[in-house]
Figure (cartoon, rainbow, N blue to C red):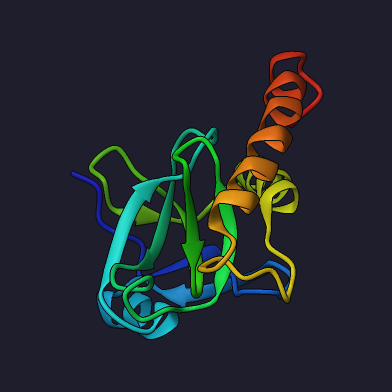
Length: 145
């Protein structure tokens, strides 16, 4: 049985800002404070072993768009946390290799300030699907980390 790490290194991506690498307390309260509400945890697209932690009600609260996930045909809104997990599912520090892959993904699909997710979702989704084709080809050809 693994004990959960009391503090973990994570990536935090806020809308229209650069990704930050920070160390946080590995507690529900801390995660909720960062995302601004109830949390939802989903697997991060294309990066094995990474969890994406977001505000479960972010779209209902009309939080700013952050980055697209065309692999899920969806977009994150509000602050997003990326962390690894251990064999038992406990959150854990993200590895350097995982960080690089996450950053490549987000750099490809992040929204720019002024791009209105709620009014232009279908247009943005189409553009991101085109970017996804290029991204997936690079991934397949081994050009990504």
